[in-house]
Length: 637
Image (tube, rainbow, N blue to C red; front, side):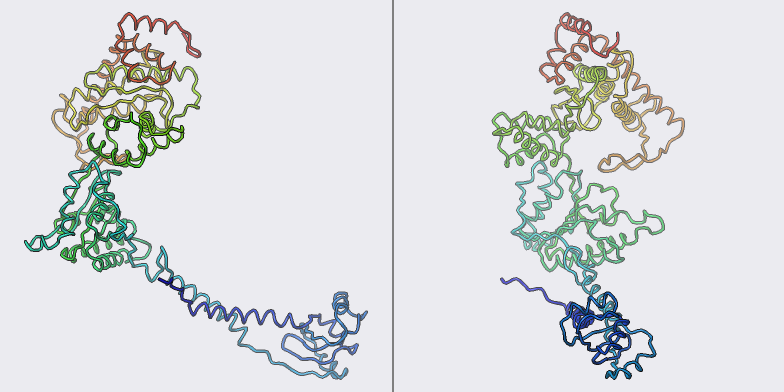
């Protein structure tokens, strides 16, 4: 196929002609005649060196004889004429108001004539050229192709279209969400065999809303549906509909559905639906009328098109609680599919998909890695796999080993290690006792999550230490005893500092915040307080998915209840603090031994941790006594 030649607009031709006229007017006269001053012209006229003259409105032109320099001329004029060859030369000079010019010409018997200058060309160039230029620029802007589409195409939808051959994602590439894939098999079957459902009078759902936290595979699942069905895939983000001009969003919605119906059977995928379909009437004084018009047009289009044509709408969002109720009713998004973070089996399946593109060492156990990545989403696991491959390549390894995955997990969870950060001996020992307290209490509490390793190497922005707890299974319900043990672990670092130094530091700020939040949930939401009873005092509508950083709604209970809640939270925290202090005082020798091990090696793996904790009391006491006798720089007696 021959490439299409770009069409030359008539405006480009018009601008080129006007510019050529401007060049002719400005350059040709000046290049064909010698320019002299009016004074030199009068001098040459008196000397009889002027052959003929043409009088114009603003200039004097004619022919002069160059026979040598004239001393009466100006210095510039003498130099100018001296450079000319002998003979006749055309000249021009700017005319000044001189009533004696014509008598002087008659006295010198120089023939002269008048010349009327054209008025239309300067007028054309001074007025018409800017107008034509503005019209041309406006026309180009209106018709400009590309990403912006120009003003004439501003109402056109510009979805990213992938035809059947371009969608290479299949259900086999999506792991860890088997239930969601099962829900979408029916959609794929309808797109492949529509007569099977039409024969029985069944109607496929018009829209499917995929809900889930970020990184759980919503977009990937929608592409897999298009790939399995073998149909075109129209993809747009909710934020791409609304722009500066009023009515653009509604026009783009209409155009998107028109394109989809022309390409049926196909799939329309709207990512980040919450940017387009927020609940109407929330903004004050109609602040979001344009977005609401776009949403209204989307509702109309979803009501108007026929699913029998083979157009299916998929949408994804991680904030379903803010969507307008009208878009969630049956007949629009009939089916909602919730994606959650994968369980341990799902994480193993996702890792199996991602490790296909890297070279694994034989010692890599994907099941063990899945157990170490509780709470990770599919995107997190992809990031871990990529980080492990980069680490192995950085160290020149032939394959990605288990140690690379372990370091990648630590890097994703805690941040980059900062081994070059210099801490003085007092701060380093404080961090060691703090992390030793967390690890020791976590191992001694029966329902707490076991510790994988402890480190006092700074990570990330503010983490000076890191206690990695590795859950052995996925948990969906927590008993009160388990929550109390978790409170003990959170407060153990602060208590260890108190016991070791008789003072506290600012390092427990995050622990205290998390402990207070956990105690608040136990009292105000879970009904785990004998004083406050079985009531749930959080009356705000909880989001379907947690949104970090979003404050809770104002409380809707009395001041007396608020005081009771505060007192019960304080009681839970004080009780946990007392239990932790008793435990650490009883196991002071073990605490000292673990802290000294951290100071010596900076990282304590689980094997070493278990050996220190479960050492005989006399051995731990001797280790603690020896550690206490050993001087530490910067620590006072």
